[in-house]
Figure (spheres, rainbow, N blue to C red):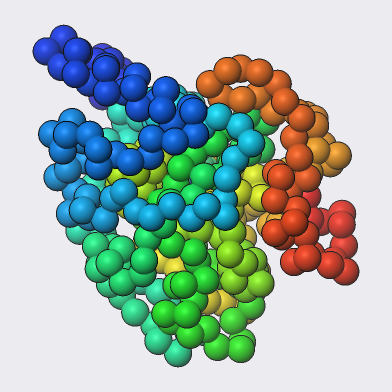
Length: 319
Ligand SMILES: Nc1nc2c(c(=O)[nH]1)N[C@H]1C(S)=C(S)[C@@H](COP(=O)(O)O)O[C@H]1N2
Ligand SMILES: [Mo]
């Protein structure tokens, strides 16, 4: 693998050490205190993503409905501990993920909608107003992070394309390009990565289409240029680097579900009382402190989403 002998992207090069390190430290301290999301206050030259054609959309306005009761995970921690199997089956995929080419990036929205459309990500990002929300994220592997995502609610995309009554689910698909993503040469996985939600879940305000993090375009390892954030579900549902969004009748089968349906179901809602077949889900490791804390039902979002599942068989909802 080509990246083995190269310097990891997160080591700070000598020449830039002073300003970059100071910037990162200051930023993470401010973020950890729950404010300081105003990246605009920093000199433009110190912002790494300025070349991105959507950089001017940041910082976006803050949606105060979504707050946290914990510290934000420092940016450099989140950017260096990722699940992105297209680039490797371990957490240190940040440098390998730089192979992902995110321009041009065409997104197709099709299936049972009145207004199907194929458009460039840069146009989509300007069509719908962006906002910043502080979200929790709970991986099925029992670690968690918190993050300031920027994006737009999935329900705004629904309004844009007008789903038809026959649409029961939204199916999301990641790019397929084994040359750009070495992990996709691993034939043990049924690429491309696929995930899905019900129409009711898609219309819930919490379902969020993410374009940025930490008040700038999101780094590639988080799933640039467009990913999903479903904070009440296990992290594998939050699919990265989306190319296609389809409105369908049949329940989509996710990549993990296809591999092991008894461990990674379609609903995959967070529940501390329902163990994974191979480990407990009662607690989670907070990424940047290593502390073990109790996991909450629906990852703390029960008030927002429990109503979606009234009358449904509880034995299928939490795996
Ligand atoms: N395309 C794609 N999306 C993906 C994954 C992946 O491997 N490929 N991993 C999932 C899992 S298991 C988790 S926990 C989150 C991790 O997001 P993060 O790396 O930004 O923290 O992305 C999810 N989305
Ligand atoms: Mo995960």
